[in-house]
Length: 123
Image 1 (cartoon, rainbow, N blue to C red):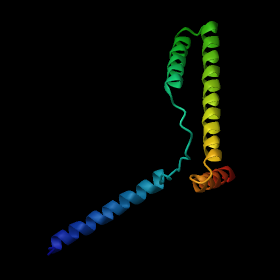
Image 2: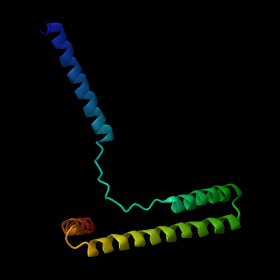
Image 3: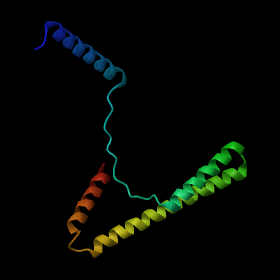
Image 4: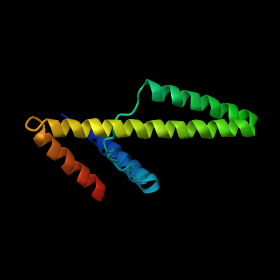
């Protein structure tokens, strides 16, 4: 099936490939797979508009470097943080109330979620 010449080429190819991979691993190392923990979904139109407005004000401040631009930018950063905290709080309260009121249907799911929450806190 294989001729001696094709076997020789395959062997040479494998040695070249292994040598290149080994050199690349030694110089750059391997990339670790990072698991991202699940987060609450916070993105909605209000937050999107606030962030777009914040970016515009930031660009305006960076071009002018005025003190009023800096104050406006810091004010908008605080507003975005406040709104995201408010949405996080609302989403958490609805999540907890859903678990509390659904005694039989989601009870198993609630225990799984609480177990996973405890696991992520320990890390």
